[in-house]
Length: 166
Length: 391
Image (tube, rainbow over all chains, first blue to last red; front, side, top):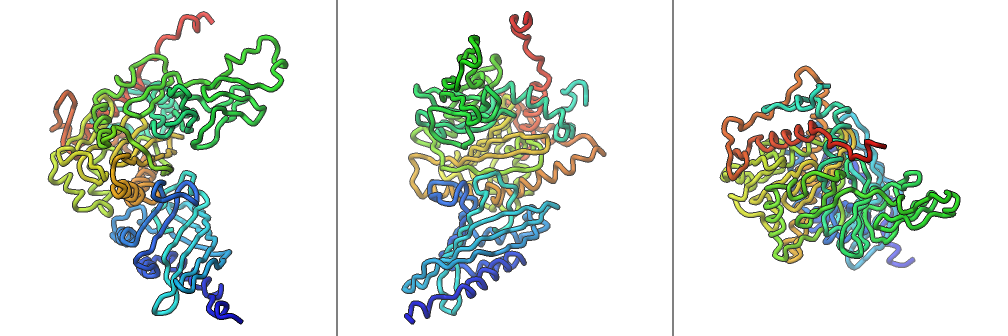
């Protein structure tokens, strides 16, 4: 058995990571969720289609960690009226696949499909998305997110109000 | 419904029915959207010969298409045979539009050029009479392309009035005198009347309240330190804070101005926002972001990232706007009291530079737009042409 196979993470470990990431968002633990990201991370929800150039094309969300921290601070301010009360959200994470594993850089690509069910203003909305994560092995052990890209199925369509973290 | 639609608008208030009555909405589609100038496209969306975008003029699906000679046609996106839309892409480049149902094919000028087995229609069949219906008038000002379904009426420049000088100033932020657009569109929908967005595009009063969680202290200085004004300008709404500084290249919330060009165009900061009324309680908003062709990449990146962070369906400002539009539609189901208050500034506004103008937080600009609504809704239809009468 080669060394590469020995160090390649198991899918179960990645599933646990993604389930926790989803649960932190579902339960409104936004600061803990933010702490999963590296400080140079990108949180990206493209608009129009999945493969846009974000320097030339509008995105739904394209946050560096400064912007994401501001977004969370706003949600906590008591004056984010579109989240008063906060949306109730369930995320179902499925179809988890492990992509390229760069041992030197200690990074791993992980793909999943997410079904997000939101209840707000007495209305239930379903979003489906193919998610792409770039994870990097943390010094303290475990993994952190360097890039989270959420490819919403309807990213080219009219969206209802989407004030929650996707 | 009141017999006289003008009775829904008073000097200091408007009646809730203009937001909730489906019959009034249908009349708006005829008397406003089928009559006045409606914003269709920015020239940067259709710059090359054959470029097109699809949009809506009131209830009409429309194709806006750049012709080989550089002119623009706006065509009703509806096959003359049985009615399907002939183009279903948001944008693209094509010389032809073909309806897949029976393969009727049109040039991008609207001309019908292909009908399978035309002899079956008999000798009187005249393809030249069956082109895509054209939006009656199309005109452009400073790169903003409008259409009107009315053959007669004010020219586009007459319709825009004093707002032309603000559009000139908006374009002048680009030293090339030309605006580019970032690719893509922010598309949002809400279950509420279209006029909430019309009002909200020029409503400085709400910024420090509804947007308390999003607006920065630095931006609030526009309202605290500035002596800006709200203007009722030829039926359109302007909030002018150029006293605080000119429209900034990075489109930050500082100097400049907001424009609501009645009935469906909002121009502010880096955005060109189009309002699409769908039903009395359903509206969609399409927003493009302006890129300055001569500005450094880092400046344009600020324009893009700020636009995304603050606007669109997940924007830190716009989510609260969308929320309040839906709450308003819910609240106005109550007829316990009919009138909404638009009285702010009535006792301190005055004529300045030929236009009724008042303090930054006032509602003068809203009153002006509702007087325009009243004028359009109560206008007597032009007399039919003689040949229509004899027919």
